[in-house]
Image (cartoon, rainbow, N blue to C red; front, top):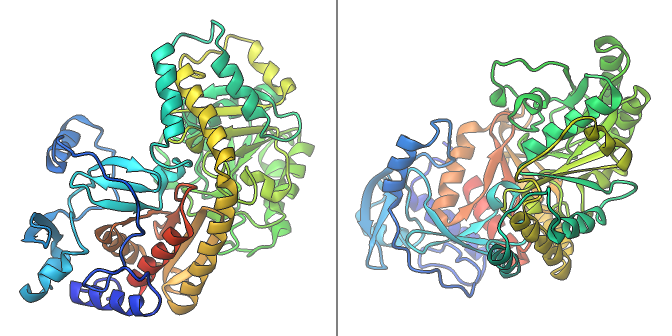
Length: 508
């Protein structure tokens, strides 16, 4: 069965890849080494992964899930003179004579990874093992893990003032709001700070309803906008929806070029928006919310030309257009700073989080002065929104993005990576689609290209093998069969080449 091979086959396939153009540095097993990186992780003397897992099971929410599910079954001695754990599905197929060789490249398969340190595009586990991070904490770490400029900004602010309240003046929140507004087009210049993307989208939907006097919101099927009351309604995947009241939201047919009913025909998709307005509402709507690239939905780019047409229909019905930039924003798409800019539209409200703080709990809503006035009708307040610690870090993120030209890097390296991944698609039948832009890329795995049958089991095996080799990627899509490639924006061309080799290895 594809991707259910033993360790000897795994070693053999990487040996072939190495001979075909892998980096010169390889292990004795023929597996390419990670790119050189000048960082030595600090010694770790904290609790073990097993101890943390026990506490997590007892004290944290049982709803928490993880990608890697194969527990430790057996251990063998590796060449580095310490015990290294091998996953049973690999270990039981490895002859004793080969185990020492295999353990050079396969380590630590516990219930969850115990990640204890990060630096730039790499993460380290409790044993000091380095992992190439191609997921960035779900498209969150944009500048790189523990970027010194961001860390210094947070540390300086923490020493001066950790928290007060927005009821008092403080220059940090105003400085960051000004810098953020300068990144947006048109009259989008009034900023409301929140603590997450869910909060930001909740606020945006509230403002649209207040401003228009209408209640109906239109979102796209397959979308994800959050897990609170309003955003769960706008979210259109059963995987993320609980059986609670979610009123006033209509889900339009998703303009998905790969799986959609109309391919890339934007005009056919937008007819559904018009029909929702005509047959599902009073003819007036509060707003339309969409991502330019659906992140949780599996890195689905909406069809070219769709957003301008949809925006026009919604505005004619009195609604506001909301761009959810929680994942695509902050230079991740490479060609532009915001995902909506790739479609040539200007929204009425923009929501953001994740990359805004490089991992800090921070989000924002940016809108026009006219729309912003609606929240003066009552008292609107957010205790931690605009916290000086978070906004100092957010301002440092903007400065790093500019100083290190990370948007340009996302475009150049992301384009190179996408081209290389499309090369893999030509070789491997299991790769049904490669899509996205910049450092927001998706690889959809299918067992049948004609039927587009989701390769659900295969992607889980592939992720396990890649993790064992030291590469971390995400997965998503309604069927859970899409690799989500969203690395930190400092990801290099050498990193991209290494990632392609490993993905090619598990797709053979």
